[in-house]
View 1 (tube, rainbow, N blue to C red):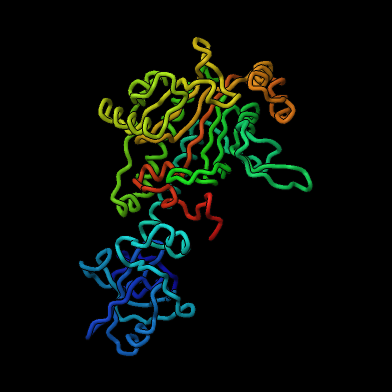
View 2 (cartoon, rainbow, N blue to C red):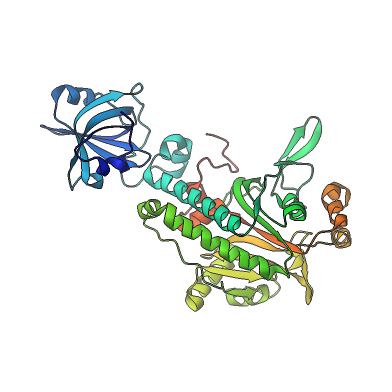
Length: 428
């Protein structure tokens, strides 16, 4: 008899079926016992009246893996309106050691550090696994939207010879006796691949050795990267980003509706045209000094409140960040060279996406590095490629965990990350 999932029981009324999963909870009453079994699709209620089977169920601990063979009967009060009667119950392993929190309760009440210390068990809770289902759906939507737009998925090295962002916040390692680093982003490689495919994307880990200990930062996270050639300027990139976000949220609604319901959240609509303000205007809206070089988290929150009140949008583009705060490969605004053809996208008052137009002429790269007092040699393999002809291009990167955290309302990005890596955590 082939195993079926709990979500398929309603299609087998009156039949004898075999299901398997984890002991979610036992309720031992005087005349009857209920075994709640959990599998990847949800919960199933097993009704036990036979004394011998009841005795076996009484010995089971929560999270023990079992197999149940039983008849499917209708019961409006049971999960999905059906339950299993007349069961035989067979353990598929030794009795499990219950985790230090109750997984059957609606909310996981353990502190976040305790959850992270016991992540393999904590992630079984429906609220934790729901966030990961939303994450998977978002990535599927990201890929589908870009595939439909003629983009090619690429896979770039995660061990590199120099830092990507001209900074010191990299994880160094020994590469057969030579210095190397974990990649901060696939930025250089995705630009070079524009010279091959014109439109590319990547889903992969990135590493930031920044000593942040905040609710929005991780030392390793998943970056959704895009780069496209033959753009007029950064606004072409922003239009692609808008469509990608819409595709991601459509996929979340379609593929993770149950997870959204579990967390009692709704996926917002992406406006046909996301509101945009220049950096100088954003400072004024946020009440920041006019000479502020960047937006602080408090400024981002103020802008989120403003765009919600003025435009009814959860999203806001801030364009034209000062060149001094952007990487050397950023294309300046031809009309205002102190400002960039770059942007950030704020999602509910938090920076979610950074992007913009890149330099595409070899001479401009030499000048940009010289202006920052940086040698060309560490970047030679990257910069030399621009001698062979590259089109005007640009791109962006979405932080997946931050996207899911904002979407679900999680207070800490670690709540939506399976096994987070940060300033303090390397296990489990």
